[in-house]
Image (cartoon, rainbow, N blue to C red; front, side):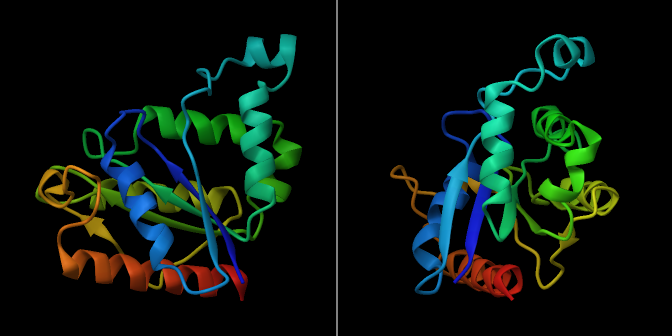
Length: 183
């Protein structure tokens, strides 16, 4: 049994990446769990704010959810061929203070998926995540890739995946990652 925390890197109400995480929940094997977090309440990182007030409650709560998980699934959009600023900002907060990095990231299973309206999916953002995860001591899963291109055509109005092949790829990806995270 694996407890996976999926974090959506998009703040948009109709985020394709949040929809992708929601679509993954029923595809997991029996006993595996996927809970979803967003980054809506995380402020911009400011060292002065941290020094004056410590970590914001939203950051403390997300750190706790990560430490209670076996693995973290980052659903990352791609903005201008890279990682969205809001997502990198959250990671910067989560790595504070530096003494907490081993507890939050150290040897924890991490994987990256993504959906984009572009024809290339999120390949550049996913590639950009790897050095960050390695620098933080995470254990990146390299057992597969899920790059959902033309995401505006993939989901129906209810947020369900219309394309059976993509649903099957998502199912294989999340069950494979859950096995890696819980193993």
